[in-house]
Image (tube, rainbow, N blue to C red; front, side, top):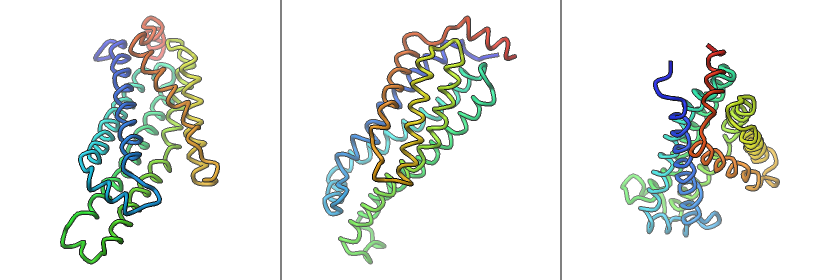
Length: 235
């Protein structure tokens, strides 16, 4: 028996998708674009020192995104388990692993500020060396963030399939999620095997799917009658 009406879960999912997209946009795109100069370690270090508050906002934004993603893994499992319990659980596991791996990569993001501090134990490094280490940490963060997209991509693929088969959510949402998942997985393997062909365009379906899910869950939610019918059959 559910603790809350299924429509409540759907509305909460919409809010979490919105928060995750906004926080992710700030932490993964806006802040790094203002601070990181990929070919200039000295300029990057200067940006980090002069905009420490912005740097920390970027990290805090990821924390918000990560918290939302963990909650979404559970809520989407609740919403999709009447379709296929095992696949819904598998999608939740892949989603949680991807969030954990991205969180590990974020440690390198935060570590970039540590090597730029005026601590006694860092005096064995010259200023140029510390600048280089800071940029290297940021590049490692970026590689780690992109290097594990396949995990989130598989979760997205599975959720798209379940939505398509559900009957209580529109099929177009499922199709969008499947395309988005394929984009995640493809970009991940291109990053590893053929970096020259890696393109941010592969993530455009992700943005479209995220906006569509947010709007639908907030405005429509699920077809409660059909969800209850599937849930009753599932039980």
